[in-house]
Image (cartoon, rainbow, N blue to C red; front, side, top):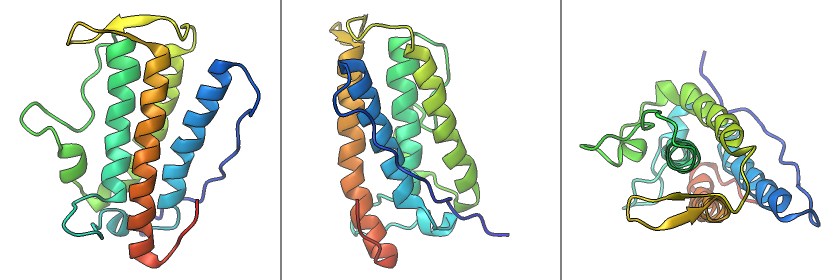
Length: 172
C-alpha cells in the first residue's frame, strides 16, 4: 500500500494574545502550512524536484525543518544532547539530498514529533531567556521563535511553487 500524506486542518491562533501566544500561534500556523502543501501526495511525489535547477522537494523541506527545530530549540537553546537530524559534518545538506520516498511517512512523523519535543523543551522558558551561540553571541528564545517563523515562511513560498508544479494545486 502506498503511503499518502494526510489532510491536515490549519487552525488560526490568537490575533490579540500576549507576545508568547502570538509567536507560538504563528509558528504553529506555518508548521501546519508546510504539511498542507504535502497533503494528498505520495512519498514519490514529495521527493520530486519540480523547479529546475533547484533540488528542493517537499520531502526535503519536511526533513530540513525537523533538523532546524531540533537544532534551535533542543540542541542550542535547551542544551539537549540529541543527535543531529539527517545531516552529518560530512554531508550538511543530507536533509535535502539523501531522500528515500519509501521513508516519507517516517520523515513526516518525525517532524510532527519534533514539534512536540521542541515545544516541551521551551515550555517553561521566558522569551527573554538566552543561550550563547557558537559565535559567542547571546541569543534569546524570542529570536528563535522569529527565526523559525521566518524559516517556515520562506519555505512555504518554495512549497507553493513545488506543489503547483506537481499537480497544479495552489492556495495558502
